Length: 132
Image 1 (cartoon, rainbow, N blue to C red):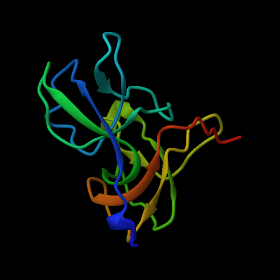
Image 2 (image 1 turned 45 degrees about the vertical axis):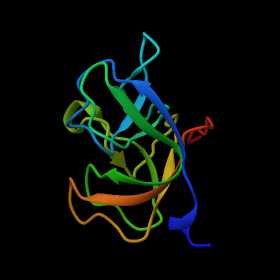
Image 3 (image 1 turned 180 degrees about the horizontal axis):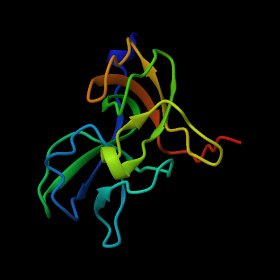
């Protein structure tokens, strides 16, 4: 079986804000039981948003498995991934995990050449791994 044939673990929750511009970005649990975009560099995400929901609509999230992910900058194949500096990039993937940041996945099948590229990643947002 190839990577692409493995079925990802997905959940559906209501979007607590307009997430229509944030497909393939990291999201986290919101205060009302739904989801919002991650807002802290290196934080633990619930998963990667798969669709483009507006506020109150169903957000489909991959928690574990293969997904597309938007890169904040160039990312090498095989790099560990974390939530980017969200002040500039809205919770995109960053390949430079620092101390006390959550490693949420690994880039597979190619790389990002520039910011905004969509990469393929294996994510595991079900565990709590921190860079020591």
